[in-house]
Amino acid sequence: MMKRIALCILVGATLAGCSTTRPSMSYVAPEVTANDATVLAADAAEHLAPALPPARTTLVLDPPASQQNDVMTPAMIEQLRATGYGVVQVEPNRPKDAPQIEGVPLRYLVSPLQAGVLMRLQYQGIEAARFYPRATDGTLVEAAPFTVRQAGQHTAQGAEQ
Image 1 (tube, rainbow, N blue to C red):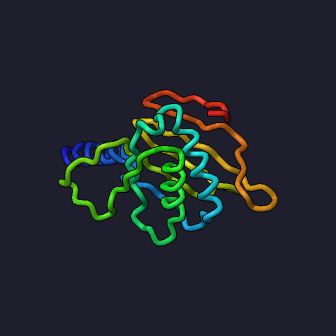
Image 2: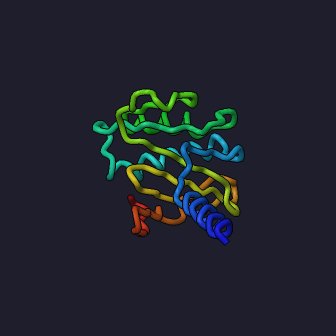
Image 3: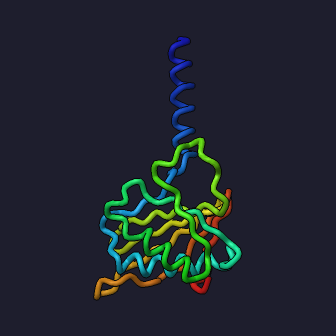
């Protein structure tokens, strides 16, 4: 009987931990093209500007572990810098006990979904997600606003933000 109780507690604790953990780094699916990344990076920079003013904000990008097919990180760095952000990139092999990098951590998760791409941005306890369907020529289009969630809140922002 005690073994069952201990096992239930262990399983419950494990499941609770799984449901609350977030990715520790960005993710970019290998199917994402350089053209996709350009569209997504421009939209990400536009979305971030009201909450994180360019020229006063340094963003700390947490790139994907596998940078082999990562077309998103170079596009993000270029677009964010062009918008006026300071950009620092975390090194993939950075020791956990290394000094903290000053700035706002930013993660991006980009993956195919149905006939388009889903981009999620994570910063300051916020997750903003937007779906980009593909036009008939294969390019990504902005068809819906970002959906923004922060610690128990859930709202859809207008496409202009």
